[in-house]
Length: 119
Image (tube, rainbow, N blue to C red; front, side, top):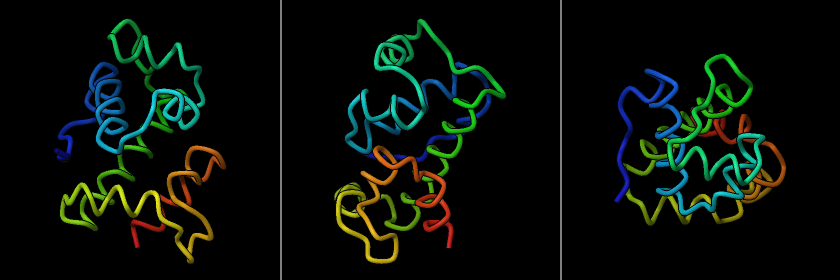
């Protein structure tokens, strides 16, 4: 099941929980989320267990906001169809010249994928 997250940026605890939820809804591993956020795998484990929160106004916070916004745009584009969202993330996109999932995880192109979905 996928859903939009309300008030995802309301607090450090909320954005931390939200970024974990988004990764899970997109079928991502903790290691992939770590790369997106510029963190280590162990940090994501702490984030997931609530032992660590993303600090407001940090680089990680900015990446988390972008990641959650990208997810919300993806959700809107596919009317919350989880299968379609998953397929789009893992299929080659000619206009992006790559697979969105790998672009954001391996090539640090979260902003480009985000902006593409906003159009």
